[in-house]
Length: 568
Ligand code: ATP
Ligand code: MG
Picture (cartoon, rainbow, N blue to C red):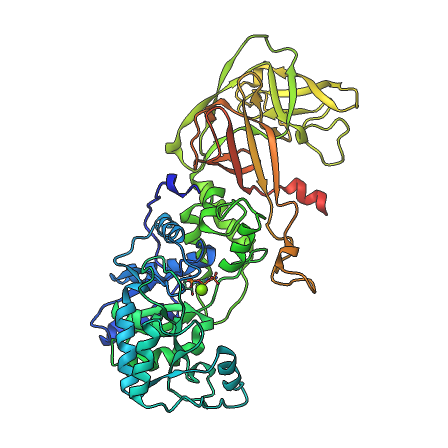
């Protein structure tokens, strides 16, 4: 894992604007003094995987809104499933939240509340509002009924309180095997809301917990643990995704039955992205089956993956602010996320020249052995970024694509007899080519016009194209990893009959270019640094880099109108 050497990037998070129904509710609650002018939220990940872009939306909302109203946010690990949870995930989640630019007020674990949750369960049993059920999970399911039919009472539903207390104590003491009994809330088996049909509160699981070890062999269910944890932390607005809307009556039922702090649950739309799967379970499968190199593979939609890819926290925050929140689920185009990445990197990334597929150019009339230091602008969007010197010599590399011996119509880059500008260099005109035995062009001979030093002709003469280059003698070799969508299908959940979602994996999602040449200013580039390779896109130095052996990831390409035109 590479999370350890990640710097925290701190720029102030933007408030979530324009307004939305959650923000409006907060404003109302502040007006009416509902929570004594206090706004407190929580971000409650289950530590069963790495965070993904969907979580970034929840994080920006939870932290962003609380910040805006002078409140705070707790980070709470919802660790009630001992079998799936690990400390590695806990650590990665903390790294990722901080990387996004947020800091929590309180750090909690649902497992901190196991004793309190147990005591409250006893309180509910005593009040006749919970009972131990001996039915199996299957039988419980069969008794639950359907959307159109009411459920049936369990034969154990009306057990006396004393018997329930005794059985629950023995469940806790480890007397019964997994799955043999559960504790259920006694609500309404005929409720039109299936969640209210005596939901399970506790199950027996003789499993080692990553924090509480073997202290417990009964574990609370999400619905019972979540709202009560919110209440214990005096969370005012508990935001979650829309699939929990039908759970809200239950959330409120527990709070009312126990007479505890009235946290309120509010639901918003889950983020879905085209060509992307946002489900920890499926992402875990990709890692376990080695379809990707790990949770932080730059093709993964995890925060650790996109960080390694070169996405910035600012870009993510801008994206989330822009998509807003609604009450209906939809799908956002991946291209929109990429737009915000480009926009942010355009503002901040240092420009350099790099050639991915080198073709040698020899300037026949340029003096041998001479090196000129050409002045290059570091970032046209940011004057304070200054200038740098790039060595120019008689032998250069240009992009193989930037030369065509027989140019198609509309091709304005280098070809025999055509004049183009070398960026920050000179005007050159192609004269002749050298080919190998297979007939491929391996070298282009050109002449330059010494009067065009810096890239401008004193006589005002124009060229139709400017191309990038690096000096052959000075260039640094590097490996560059080019990424395409991990899934080739717009909706990767749409799976062919009889196959699983991995059938939609794009076999060409990774292309490794092993012989790229970079300008020498990149010699000491450090992992995590981001650059714009002029005309090619944004690139980020990968932690696989070693001294003298740089590895870069393409974060996102620049728009290429030529490629678009060709595609038509
Ligand atoms: P997954 O299905 O990927 O495991 P989850 O909802 O089970 O996601 P949790 O760890 O329980 O993951 O999520 C923590 C918080 O992040 C929850 O409040 C959840 O609603 C929110 N969240 C998870 N996925 C998304 C998403 N795609 N868009 C917005 N919020 C999300
Ligand atoms: Mg979950």
